[in-house]
Image (cartoon, rainbow, N blue to C red; front, side, top):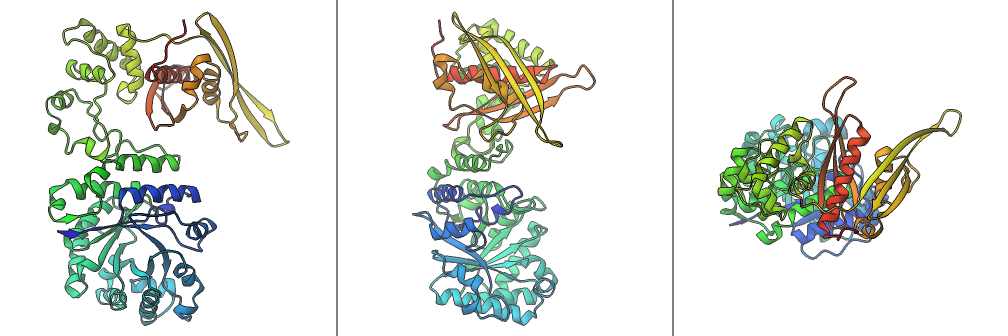
Length: 540
């Protein structure tokens, strides 16, 4: 079986994503997670390109399993490799491997570099030799290779050959603009191997501008390359890079690949990939994509009644793998399409045992349909559904009562042309026989206004007596609003995602003609569900 080498460029190419900026601490955390998973190469960035990358390579994290790699570019024309200060900052980094990008498309050589084709070949050759002489593992990224090969295959191949004959360990074929299709990738890689560069020296670097980056990576593997570059969650410039979170499980779990190839990630480590994906989203303060293959919250969610019924009999009927294999879980949500069998399954997973002939099942089903007619959607708010079902069954503990709440907004003049908006929430709560009044403003720790929902959430969780310790790690991480119909009688639906320090995430819903009231219902459900899961004893 051939060995496939996985090369992660999340911290360099992934950082080209709009709105993404890694701190030094972020980079350390990501590298440790990738190293624990077992990636062969971890590209840390470009030494000298910015203060963060410079600090990162001066104080690199300890790595056990992966090869830490620096990124740079081939030497500049008119300067020897020994005297190029930009190249020197990369070579002097504390890494065993270095990846240099160079042009392999004559159009770019002329238009971007403004040099001759021969000069470009010399730059590639001398740069790779310089790395080899410095004792580094040399990797050459052939930028715009596929577009270049389609325009002039002979010159693009000469660029690869210059790196190969200079003893580069890897020559990586880059679909930099992301416009090449899988059949083209396959044929061009085959041609390169036939022209004289063995597949065991070739890699693939795909961008996702036609939604084909993962497919292009697989096409290149089928054609003979043995290194795959990509990023976690498909981060990258424009439409992103090939998503390693999709590539890795496919290589391990799909017969087409696992009978021919092996990688340095076993099935035990594969179970960590969902956690890795969501950890990166947390670092970037992003909401995880629910429909991501393998790791998304909806990847193994079965809403349709017929599907859910079949899944209960045999999961293979509607699942291509066991979700446990990638650290994910199967979800059968409650909705107006739910049937009796999957409702019993949902309740059982929440710790609610009920007989299949219990008349209350039909009451819950009818209640779901009535609620969804009014705008509720429990298939995306499982925590609110559990609270609803427990109330129907008389199994929901009563933790506290909200007697009243009020939210006000004030616009304050700061300067002649500047105003600040501050919201304030006042909440009266009964804990047993005790009444508590809490007041909170919408400002965060930096004095920035976070809006009226933030103020209301802060007031509701500010002073809940004995419950306080169970709620201190709870935070609102996503807030979605949808107007259900137009006009002055519009109904508003609010969906809230909450999370605690253990990474447990739950979703709640509120529906009302008033957006603040809908938010209040969703926040209240979130607090109650958290207390329920903490097995808190209600105040008497």
